[in-house]
Length: 90
Image (cartoon, rainbow, N blue to C red; front, side):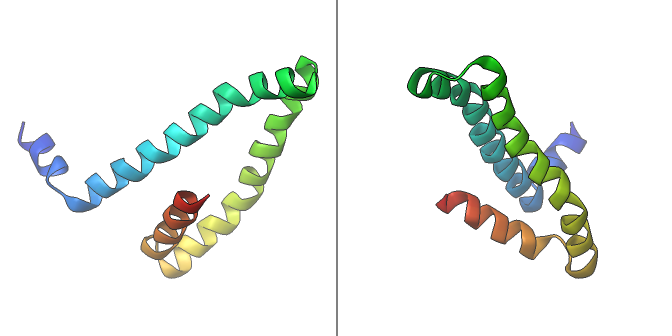
């Protein structure tokens, strides 16, 4: 019990959990509703709708090496804060 108490009393851990929860909530709701919206409004078939997810995942795999380099150079605090602010306003 001491491990969990020390983890959940740490502000950094709680901040990370909040950011991760909000990010997962946004992405899960997008992944669940995007195909239904596209099929209903634009009458696209399943394969064309599935290609929309390539537009979501390919940039992520291209940006990941750059994000790792930035983290190694300046740390994780400032890029994480900027990312969270951008996500909050989008």
